[in-house]
Amino acid sequence: MKTIRLTIDKDNIDPELIEQAAGVVRRGGLVAFPTETVYGLGADACDPDAARSIYAAKGRPSDNPLIVHIWDVSQLYTIASEVPEVGKKLFDAFWPGPMTVIVKKNGRIPRETTGGLDTVAVRMPSHPIARELIKVSGRMIAAPSANSSGRPSPTRADHVWDDLEGRIDMLIDGGDVELGLESTIIDLTEPVPMILRPGFITQEMLENVIGEVQTDPGITSADTATSGLAPKAPGMRYRHYAPKGNLSIIEGPEEEVAAFIEKNCDEQRAAGRRTAVLCRSETRHLYNRANEVIVMGDRGDEEAVAAKLFAVLRQMDEDRVDCIFSESFRGAGVAEAVMNRLMKAAGHQLIRVGS
Image (cartoon, one colour):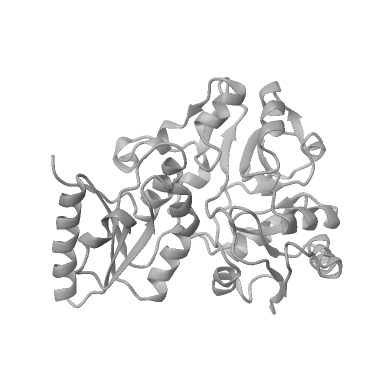
C-alpha cells in the first residue's frame, strides 16, 4: 500500500486537502491525523471492516476498544443508550478537550469498534485538524494512537511514518502535538464515575465539576505487576510505550538515586552497553557517566515532562540505547499520568534506593 502524506497547517486549513482525507474515511480507509494529545489512526467508527483494518495495521489486540471521536456533543446521543447527568456536566466543562467518557452504547456502533463490549468510549478533540476531518467526513471516527501496538505513542508525523508507512492510506502531517499524553478516560457506567486512564484532566478537576470520582486501583499502584490488581480498561493491561532498550525507574532521595544510576551506568558501559539517564533540570549536574543525559523538565512542571516523554522514548531507539535509567516523576495531577505511562514503558521495573 502506498501511504499518501499531506501537510496541513492547523491555523490555515486547506479545505481541498481535508476533503481528500475525508474521502478516504468515507471509503473505509485509514487516515492518521493529529489531535491535541497524540496522533490518532482514524477510520469510520460505524464500519466494522474499517475497525478491523485499524487493528490489523497496528497489530492491536482485538479486545482493546477504539475511542470514537466526534466533533459535536449531539453525536454522542446518537450512539449511547444512556447518558448520565454527570456526563452532561463533564461535556460542558471539558469538551472539546483531552477527556474520553465511557457510556453504554446502542446498536449503531459495532462490536468490532468497541472490542466486543456493550459500552463505547467517546471523545471530542480540540485540535482544529481533527475536528475539521470529523466534520467534513460526515462520519464519527474511531481512532486509537497511530503507532504500532506497544510502541511509544506518536507525538509528531515522523513517528507515525516510521511505524505505519505502507500500512495505512494517508497521514496528515499537522506538526507536533501540544500535550503529548493520551486523554483521561472516565467510566460513567459505574455508580461512582471511575478514572480508567489518567491524563491532563485530573481527578481533582473532575471532582470540582461532578463531586466524587474514584480511580481504578489497578492503575494507581506502583507495584501493579505484583499486586494482583488488573486494570479495568483492556488497553491498560497491555505493554505499551516501551523502548527497545531496558528502562528502569529509580526512586528515593535524589543523591542516592544519582549514586545508584551513576554506578550502574559505569557497569553497563564497561560491558559495552550504551546508557542514558532521564532526569529533571535540578539534578542534571549529578549525572556524568551516561552516554546521554536527557533533561525532561523542571521540578513541578509535569506538563513539560508529559509533552516530551514519548518523543524521548523513541529517541532512545534511534540512538540505540541499551539501558535507560529514569528518575521518578511521582506527584499529583499530571504527574500521575506521567508515572502511569513511564511505569508501563518500564514494564513496572521500579527500584527504590535509600531509606
